View 1 (spheres, rainbow, N blue to C red):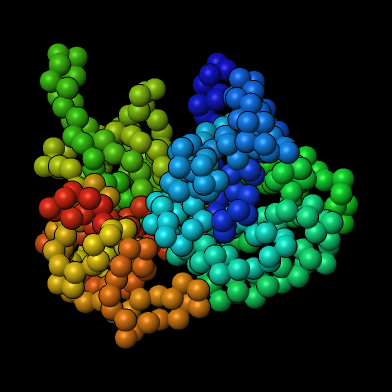
View 2 (view 1 turned 90 degrees about the horizontal axis):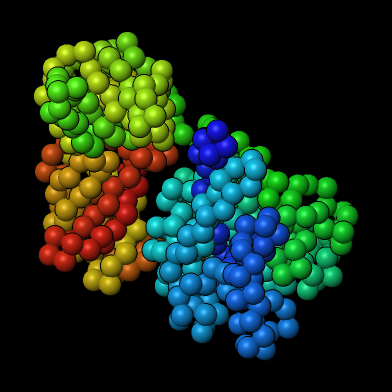
Length: 421
């Protein structure tokens, strides 16, 4: 029973971002260490490495900086994923890089996050990277953004300094579409307000970072209104026991599905009723995002991968001319009128980049309409035409059905991620 309890625990995905040396990796190390989520031999290994490097304190950042190049330079280059759990929740952390040239890595790490932790160095205050990361977090539709004002120990835990930075961030954030913003003064190095309440900042009446991670409400982060079920695989066991079984497997991308519901299949437009919803554990009475399930229907309908099961009275947009905000990942720049392979939910198609409308200056949020050259890490608004209709929603309504990736057909590299506007 105990194991099932662990499996049933709610999962919170969060990403960390911030400028170089703001202490992201140290903060994660502190979270893991103070919440007793690392083994003694791991702790002994980083203690040994810290001594060898001549560090005064035990360098908790070594827990997450996995690449040798990261350890040598003392920076994060790639996205490092860490898993840990407390009695209340399970967590996946994406520790993303702070450098400008790794914007694409941040986009990758943050695309599925419920929460973004943006670190600000209390000595330096708001810098260019703070704007950049806040903008990317809102562009990616991350519902909860927490600004951790770090290194408070280096400004003598000054209350005025904290509120000054908070005001600056709020002024910038007011220009963006952010629904839930929080501020916590911390010292990742000393552990203040990370897992335990700080004795040095009695003026701060809010919660600690771990308490916030454990209790923040994420149930409404998913769209439970628009029913969307992209079919990933058709299950036909061909066994004596399940001779006539035909199930459609996939992950619910939105809404709630129940046996008996009237549904429609796109693109054919055929309708039927849900017979059963099966999982590995057995049949369930309802399925909602982001559960992976198998749906069986009462009628025999020709359905294959890339089709979508929806409600007939609540349909997605269907079209081939799509407007995207695109983050470009590749060293080779975007080719106007270039042809790329495209993936959207479980559907594969090809597309043509019809026009580049503008690039976004991430630091000022201004549109650069005269500069149409899209290079690696640039974010641009583009129009594409697909070879077959997509069944989509706006990204800010549904992150699953509102996102696409572009693939270079020659090299098979993912060259861009797009948010449908």
